[in-house]
Length: 217
Image (cartoon, rainbow, N blue to C red; front, side, top):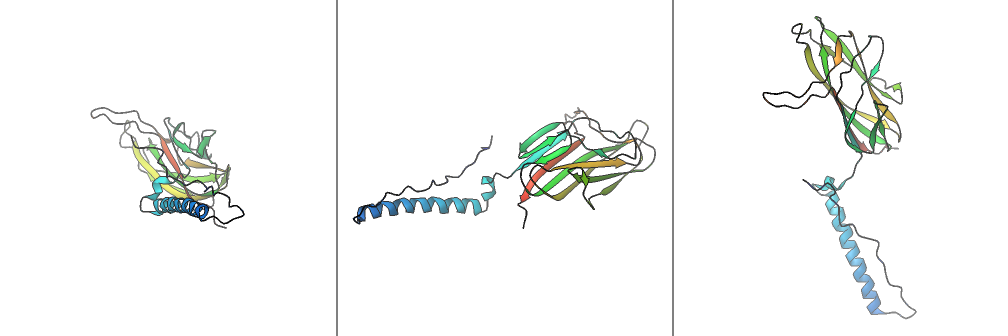
């Protein structure tokens, strides 16, 4: 397994000897040597971070979550939050109340999701997906997806909806993914692991949050 805690040899603050009332070349040379070692380590650390693979030393906040349940809409006039019941990775990002993707740091964040939609009706349907921050809709964040009719009575239409979106958030803010279908026969559906060949289960929803930048003033 790869090392999950790659760290630099970061230099500690130099401890210089105090000079007496009389100048001492030996003491001066000793302090010069300490400073020389300090700056060599400092330059090496900066070069490592700013180099071509320096990102491996960064510890930016992130989160990855998924859901293993079917998510349904009871009617077409209500906005429903997408929920998540499994945490894959969490570093400064958590899920509260099942749907509230909450950040611990101010900044610009990149939210990416995929939703496994299913249409069981014998007609084309639409579904709207948009974002809310702290319970308030984000203006101009909606997307509308078209779903074809089912292929047969026992074979619904399936499609993955995926998107990424930059959001400016303050510490403790939360964002939710909202959805609303044109028919209750549209749902966000999970599927069990398959056989022949063996293949993984399909989560109903997957979301990741990645820290992009601090908020520019």
